[in-house]
Length: 555
Image 1 (cartoon, helix red, strand yellow):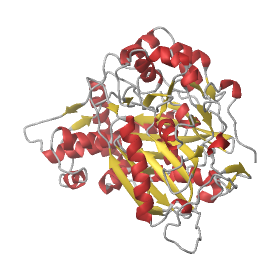
Image 2: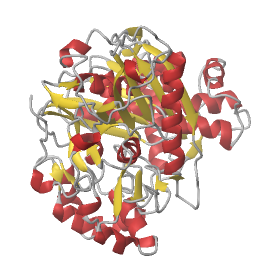
Image 3: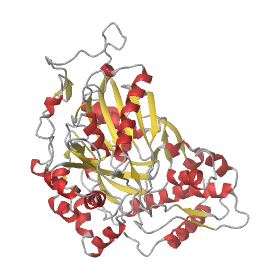
Image 4: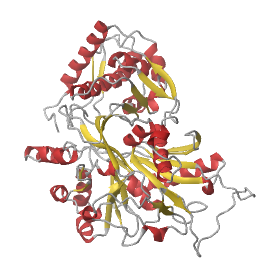
């Protein structure tokens, strides 16, 4: 199969500084027949033997880098999808002002490289054993950096950041909402990248002029990590990350000049957009024992969909991390939501695009983190399960964790977190239980919106992410949503999805169908709550949300 450059070349406004990707190969790799082929290079250095002595190479492992909101982890997978070793490092959360959340992009890059090396060392393997690298990343979080030095000109602005809420509200008031949604599948909201990038260009002295000259690059964290992995030679992204910027036409599948003009983003600073299983480049000499192909990339939630092997129309997954994100596979055509869900590419593999409806909850694990770090109610996140089980119910307490506003289906950026039903006999266990219950109630809100958009209730909800390890929460989700919940044996399906994409890119797995047997179910949770009790608790939740809504609802 020839090189898969599916994006309309007329839409690609940013190239790798005029250099061919093959000039980066250092003798490895070239693309052909859907596989990387070794090619001779007179300047290539022989890689270290890694102590093997016999010179054999089991080149059937994948290194996945999962760059998340609070940490970066790297995992080495074998061809059966088993995790052999991993490493994880948290990064600092910066809160420079009200409604502002930032990350140090260079700290994240260092953590990505360090964890990749640590996971590789812990696995007992070396770079010769790695067929390819796959990258998954927190979506929407945006960074602008100098094209020559690779240094960010400002901290990355995180998806939770709401500094541009007023600007977004003004754009909606000016009548731009329908047009943006029609092209992007998104709502005008500070959650997405466009207004974050625009803010940096408008508030860093000289940034806009430098951007107009082409001296800057902009992108999400995948692009920034890829840039540094390749030694500053490759500025690319994939369709799933591009689609979260509010600058990408999901129908034509390219950057949209009118949207870029609307948000004030020079197209020259944006990355080229490719399939998820594209040959993105190779690692720069010196990072590992030899250059390693980078052959898969996706935003974290689409990566989790792939890791859960949700390849059939109607299949649904929910990932519980800092937030909760639910994706419903809708097939090869975008479906427009009537209930404020997002229309998004699920993946584009081998030139074929699948779409999904997505519901985004901004605070799931973040609410538990607040219990621990914000008010000191618990010492460890895992304490919530025992506390929730220690009381028969939440004693009428409802928490609405709108710390960064409410996501789908409300999209209320002005809402703020609230706790209702407190009495003198409310105990810490009731608060912990109410926090977990809120995650389940929000899950139900998303399932209901998807059903009301014309889909049936899912036959099963596939869940993953750190919070999915909580048995009590899994059972309560099944009870409240009245849907069986399926938990895999490896909750790190985001990293597994990145590994799947990289493996597909280098031919380790031939097609999507071959991945179905790799996913393994660990446990299923069946609904077990009486209908009248379920209805009463859901009614209480809806009342709490109604009280929390702001006057700016919809922005």
